[in-house]
Amino acid sequence: MTSREDELLPGTRRALSHRIAVAQAEGRAPSLVAAVVRDGRTVWHSARAGVGGHVPDETTQYRIGSITKTFTAVLVMRLRDEGVLDLGDPLEKHLPGTGAGEATIADLLSHTGGLAAESPAPWWERTPGSLRPELADVLGDDPLRHPVGRRFHYSNPGYTVLGALVEKLRGAAWEDVLRREVLDPLGLTRTSSRPTAPHAAGWAVHPWADVLLPEPAEDLGRMAPAGQLWSTTGDLARFAAFLARGDERVLSDASLREMRTPAAPPEAADVTTGYAYGLGLELRRSDERLLVGHSGSLPGFVASLTLALDDDVAAVVLANCTSGVPVVAVGADLVRIVAEAEPRIPEPWRPLREVDPSVLELAGPWYWGTHAFGLRLTADGLVSLEPLSGVGRRSRFRPNGDGTWTGLEGYYAGEVLRPVRRADGSVDHLDLGSFVFTRQPYDPDAAVPGGVDPEGWRGLA
Image 1 (cartoon, rainbow, N blue to C red):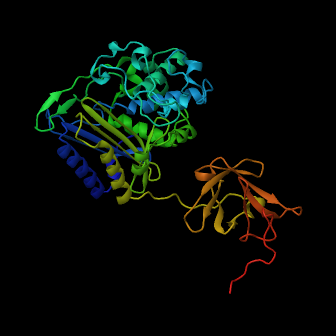
Image 2: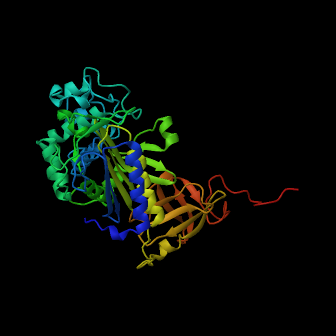
């Protein structure tokens, strides 16, 4: 993936540069670097620096904190896809004796395992990982804070456990597995567990004075799968393209879609702010745009990786300060600037190559009681069912090969759509999870449960 800034209009590049300049100045960051990906390629990169006289580029490493969790989640999903484990397996099946064995693999991926947010004291981000050489040192004597599977509670120890699980099932160190199975295949040559030059130094900026304090860069040891990695905007741009499109050498697009699907019951506050968590990925609502990715922080560094899948735009923002720069908001703004200034050009419409007449006859209006829907055949081989009012339940359906269809999203995800035919072969109605859809509202000629009043529709004096 190469950087081709000329693919963005000058006005768009100016707006992007202005946004990060404001972020670096107002956030008082020693340096800030950012990149934008469109259509799977880096199309813009820029940086601002006010310390040291060196302006970082797309090869300069920053610590990315909890974005590391997404890498760990990819490793776990690979094990699932290979049949080594199931997401519904309790941890105890594969990694016994942790004290958190009731939690499933999916619970740990989605932060619903009930585990504590942090490891026991001392503060793990600012102390050597050698102080916590074993899982027991990370989890402590009482690892659970909540009932397993009941609520979302972000947990760094939870991803430490997942890293240990990867090591147990692969028979190799987490870092080595990550390099072999993800970093090397994707060409992420500047992503590593320890910094390699050129890399930024981590700083704390005094909240009430324009002065700096160096932050320690500890090796997190056992906690590494939760936040150890160093990376660059160049590498994270490639990783963003992978998260959007998949790469069969690493993980299929279907498994990545699963990771991008909300998996954790949100807290009430999260509902109002539009936040959810999938399997190693955060989901946020920004205006009317759904953003997927992850944020990260460790002393001296903040980071964000943001994808807007519908717009096919992603952004990476890295800064070397403990606080001050709202990297999640900046990433969302970079995506918005590109998506609004240069909207995605859709693929040309093309007709279906062929169509089954028995499927074509299902197209058109249908009624669930008095609610009007339209069923449409699309060129990708799916059918879509949408309310004609524009408001209500909608879904796409994939064919099952036996004349039935399975819902892919929303209320009807996993539900079966089945045409019910009369003795002469004509369609009487559609059965969708037992609900009956007819060609007319409460069609008297269709098998509507409860029957239809024989006097039909009427007015009232």
